[in-house]
Amino acid sequence: MENITAIAQMLSEEIQRELTTEYTLTDIEQVGRRLVQEIGRQAIAEVVNAEENGYPETALCPHCEKEMRYVRRRSAQLRTLFGCMEVKRAYYLCPECRQGCCPVDQRLGLRPNAISAELERLAAMTGTLLPFGKGRDLFETLTLVSLSDQTVDKATQAYGATVMRREQEWQVVAHNQDELQRRKRDVQKPLRLYGAIDATKVHTRGDDDHPWRDLKVGAWFEARGQPPKSPDGEWCIQAENISYFADISPASEFGSLMWATGVHHHAQLARELVILGDGAEWIWKLVAKHFPRAVQILDWFHATEYLMPAAKVAFPTQQAQNEWVAQAKQALWDGMINELITACLGLVRTEDSSDPAFVAARYFDQNRHRMNYPTYRRQGYQIGSGTIESAAKQIGTMRMKVAGAIWNENSARKVAKARAAYLSNEWDALAAYRALSLAT
Ligand SMILES: [Zn+2]
Image 1 (cartoon, rainbow, N blue to C red):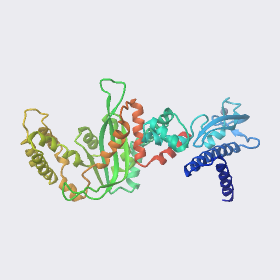
Image 2 (cartoon, rainbow, N blue to C red):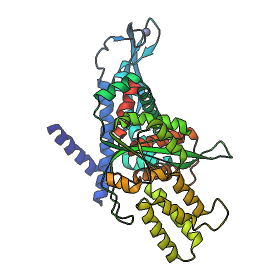
Image 3 (cartoon, helix red, strand yellow):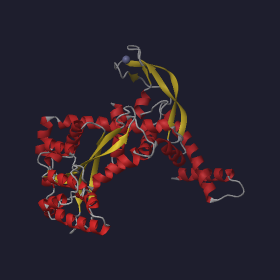
Image 4 (cartoon, rainbow, N blue to C red):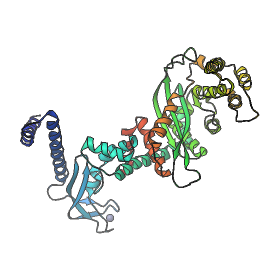
C-alpha cells in the first residue's frame, strides 16, 4: 500500500505539472487517466520483459519434446488494454524438427502482433451490443484504445465461433448414449423447466431473390410468478436463469441445436417440461421429435394477435371491434375453443382463404390442443413467452436489423450466437472457455 501511495503522490505532481492555469475537475480527470494509461502501458511491458530475466532456461519443443536451443531475444508488439507495447521474448529453435518458438507466448497467452485476449473480450462484447463502427467509437472513448471497425468485427465473430465450438461439444455429449444414461442416474432433475422458440428475419446479401433469412431463437429458462386472474390483468412473469441459443439454419439443424442445448440444461430429464411457441408448424414438429413429453403451449400473446385483424374487417367502429375482441379473449382464456372458432367463422365476409377471420379460425383449430389455458393456469404454468419474444427482438431486431444492415450470412450467424451468449450472462464463462480452447 505504501508503494501505491508513493506512486499516487508522484502521479499527482505530474498531473499538476500538466494542468494550465485554469482548469476544472474534468481536465484533472482527463489528464489523470491519460497518465495512468501510460504508466500502466510501461509497467505491463516491464512485467512481461521481466519474465525471462537472466540467462534463459532450457525449453522443450512443443512439437517433438526434444530440448530446444536458445537463439536470441525476439521482439513483438502487443496490443493491450493499455495500448501498444514492444516486448522481447526468448526465442528457441528445435535442432530436431527445426521449428522455432517463444515459450513465454504460450505460458502467458501472449498474442504477438494481435490484440490481447482481454482486449478481444471487451471488443467482442462491444460488437455484440453495437454496430461495429459505433462500437469502435464508444470503445475508444471509454478505454482510450483505438481499434478499427474490422478488429471489433473480427473479435465479435471470434466469440461467435467459440459459441459454435461449444455447441459442437454439446452436440457430441447429446448423442452419447452412455453419457445420457449416466446423467439420467446421477443428475439432479429440474422440477419445472421452460423452453421457447421463435424466429425473426435478417437481411443477408448473396441471394438477391431471397435476401431475408430466418434467424431462429430459442431459450431455456425457469419462471416465477403467475399469469393474472383475467386476460387484461397485470402480467408479472419473471423468467430466471435464461439461456438463449440462436442460428440461421434449416429447421432440422436448429432442432439438433435445440436438443444439444436442452441436454446441456437437462431438459430431457425435467419432471415437467413446458414449451411455448407461436403457431409455426416447424417449431412443434421439432418439439414433438426431440421432446415428446413436453407440454406444448401456444403463446398467449401470439394467439390473441389474431383477434383484432378479424374484428377490423367485420366491424366499422372501434368500439364494436374492441367489444368483440374482449369477448373472444375471454373465451380463449376460458378454454372455450369451439365457441371461439364459431365466433371467428361468424365474422368471415369473403370467400377468400386469406380473410383474417378465417385465418384466425384455422389457426385456433390447428392449435387447439395447445390452448388449454384454464388447465395450464391451474398447474401454475406460464402461458406467455415474453422471454423469447424479447430475445428475438433483442438479438434480431435491435442488433441484426439496424437500419441499412445487410449481413454476410456466416457473420450474421456468429454475431447472433455471440449476442445470445451475452444476453444469457455467459460472457465471462465464454471468455474462459475460449482461452482454454485456444490453449489446447
Ligand atoms: Zn521439435
